[in-house]
Image (cartoon, rainbow, N blue to C red):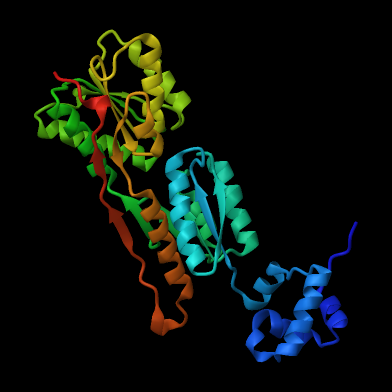
Length: 341
């Protein structure tokens, strides 16, 4: 096994002290040009790479930000990661992206990993509805910002979208189009986002003088296309089939669309469909999908900026004030919901 090259090896080859090599790496302007060139040549010849973990231990500050999302298979979270990575890169930091796969046990493991790695801070979309993982992580004293979740009952920062308003936008659109019986393909009931979108849907029905029985909920264990296809099959088996369906995210909606296509059910003439997130695939579907747009890239960038602001504050005179940022959703209407009734 090849032996790793250390800073002492660079100093020996360049004929300088270890301190001079350190200055070339960290404070190059303090070293004479000729000496700096000699040290850089030695670094190049030896293939020296400085130990970031050792530097972090000495400085007490990491250059890595953790990002833990529910599902990296969902393009929505890819966009969140893009926004966070852009903001972090502008600050000279990197992002360690991890996927809890909507599993609280995996979430706990990744939060422990972040603590072991002494990351600068964490951007977190929680999957554990009990809040135990957050409570355990808080003991490490590492700052974190909740993403796509309001910080209810906590003092931390959060960046989210008003999902109650989003659910209302979706169902109000369907009611205005003449639908009076609507299915809600909801996803795991433990997720706040799923519950809030249902609340918004019920609010829109109440505004139209319709009771909660006008909304038929079809829960799923996951928020992916396969779960949407399964929900679509259950929808087809109902004796009194709703004329429209609102899905808690676009992946579920695409799965429902696939199930309808396979069964010969016309969309939107026989069944109108509205999704949520407005991922790139929504507009590219066989029947372009009406969806509630979330500003995912903006959400990731704002969350990273809040975390950077908090971790840059030093001393009591510059205390960071935690904030809850709530962004507004937007309905994007496409062909999947435009049937004439």
